[in-house]
Length: 554
Image (cartoon, rainbow, N blue to C red; front, side, top):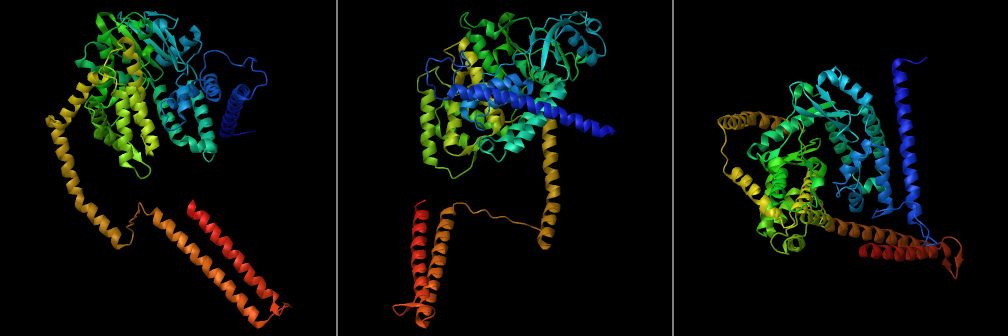
């Protein structure tokens, strides 16, 4: 009855309809529970529907619970939103930071099928030993311990089955909802298009384990000068898009170490592990939570799970280095300039007010003495500073900010007296020295010289094309006048007054002519029509004057 394409289309729309129903049901249920918690109660002793440690706004809390219930795509979206307080309300971002990736482990038969699908053979044949009891389970994948035929102990990260279809469906649903909410209050508060575009790129990278494997190889190379920092080696013969095999690191998770005393060496090493690759090549671990950091024998530190990796350009690194050194030297001008360089002013900036707010912020995060510099407080303060002065900060600022804030929190639990600026300052200074006094290799020098020469050779052609467009009338020049809004407003007021005066004058003239001609019925020897026109002109003039006065006040 239906063609193959029609059947596929109908199946897809049916699947989307099912998912819309599930999303709507979950959101409505949690929305109703949030309403029941926030409505006025006649009996204060009545127990709430949801109990336990759940601070904050019930609406945002139930939205987080709904995201957890809706599965991996919504959980990952919520985790992304928690890093973007510039795009969503701050309270919502704080609530989403509590999102938990809780799932049941997959059955051994399912894992066996997944490994067979990726490697073309059963786990018992690919590995000399494979433990079906997972080391960890999350919404994207779960990790198993195994042993290669050569005797190496490895960890095997296996992607959950049918995840591609779930992601495609949920992304389509989210993007469709984003288009429908674009013109609403929600769309104006939250930058939905930017959020969903960023989220699509992030989750597509997370689903391809070869991208994570390449990131691990890159970090291993960058940590060569830090032998105390360990990143697992990737075994490419046992790695595919849906399966990642790496060294098994035998150590204790950072979360299991808390409460066992201070460790100043590892606290400083953790900060270096997070910031050194950033200053070297502009990359950093984007998810440094306690479960992804291991304490290894010999005082070493192990990093795992490179599914989220941030990347920043040269200009951002330069400004970040200036910010750290400016904070170290209490250089208020440098901190203010970094805020302006990183962000994009959306309106005229009051530089004096911005300087005063910057001074207050720096005093607040550095005013308690050595060892008490609060980088997390600085970053959050810069977000508030940017909001107050209509400066739009880039999304990369918040991703790096989240990494620094989480790293600071973890490091201070190991060493409460740690001075993060003193630890990160040498890394920033080293980067600035290498930038100011570069020592390029012959290959890099040749590449730069060739690129410059090519640009010079193309310059006459570009000029000729511009002149041709100018001769054909195809060259468009756009002038944008800034700071003329007040003048435009005054011109509008003047033109409105002039128009009103002309209309009222015309009505007065018409009324006078009618009175002089004596047209129409009369009262007391005067034309009723003429009197009506004059009265209307008087009323219109008074109303117009009143409206102009109100508009001028606004």
